[in-house]
Image (cartoon, rainbow, N blue to C red; front, side, top):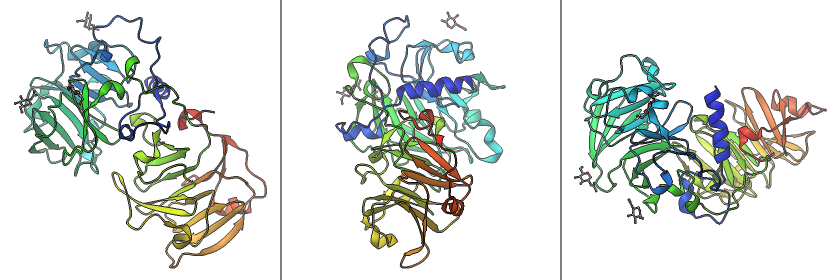
Length: 444
Ligand SMILES: *[C@@H]1O[C@H](CO)[C@@H](O)[C@H](O)[C@H]1NC(C)=O
Ligand SMILES: *[C@@H]1O[C@H](CO)[C@@H](O)[C@H](O)[C@H]1NC(C)=O
Ligand SMILES: *[C@@H]1O[C@H](CO)[C@@H](O)[C@H](O)[C@H]1NC(C)=O
């Protein structure tokens, strides 16, 4: 737990905002770095300085979301700070080999029931051996020959990265050796070999917030885990994105958004998003830390602030003014053809609205507009307001409904109701609760 807290605090310090509108689009899909702090790097004595341009041997997160960067017998924890001896964290790595470096590492994603025991373990590859760690403790029986655990995967690897189902076709691991990529299916233990000549030879690879990065030299290239396709302007210098380096900052002005939500919703994949100004944060992914991202990173057609967001089936509805955008939610979101459309045409109401939410397994969306709650049956054609109820709360910013009931967000606080009906009949507001600046990565 302590570890987790340390990490969360670390990631908050990092939590950046890519909110500055002047920033270049191309960086939006890549990880954030905060403004470098000049006083930070001056007083440590370690072998490597990653701001000099280090070619990493391996990069992988652990079970708490802490990211490790490996070089020789050293490692870095997270996106900022000095290097330290790797044996301080992963003790046995040192005892079994004397080469002084790991070839590859990845964090296992394996939710299949019979094999859950290795979910979230970090696997290290050294020559022909594999090591499995959990909670920084070497698992019993390890190290093993790579072939015993990953049949068909060669020794002396260059890089490895997890690829969960939904992003790859099945829960898989991608192993890199030169231009060869071995796609290992975790369940069937079968390997498909591909050749990705167009990618640089990766010396390390990492999955971070559903994106895939191949590191080469001090650069990295983002690729699609199934096709290997590279879209956008790559390579990029890792020092601008994956670490804080004084000469590689993005300039001043990064600021957390104030704790006031524009919208909040959970999609059918269990991803919960809070929208604030032109950024969003994921509330369900502490496995990768908590970071604000520009809304355009996931919904590229949306510019500026949103008014309301709700999920229905495998679709996410985003309302902005008098327009509604409908996205199909899969690993990534795709705008459905013909959208955005006028709100009037889709839901039979005029914008702007304050908030909208659907309760689990329901077909009725509740739209809050001023001090009214409008109920629209999404199975009806055409869609019209079935019911209109007055509500006591004014100036609602956002609302959501889950198995706990309804939460209504107003400025820095929120109110909890057992159900939309109770909310509508309540004459007195329940006690307000504060939005957590830690959880929402916002400025109280
Ligand atoms: C880790 O390795 C360094 C350098 O080889 C050595 O000096 C140190 O004693 C080792 N520490 C542990 C905990 O094994
Ligand atoms: C990349 O790997 C291939 C082996 O697949 C090797 O022949 C080639 O020299 C490597 N390229 C570089 C730039 O290291
Ligand atoms: C990194 O990328 C830059 C820009 O594309 C390129 O000029 C440089 O040669 C690359 N360096 C390495 C070590 O890959």
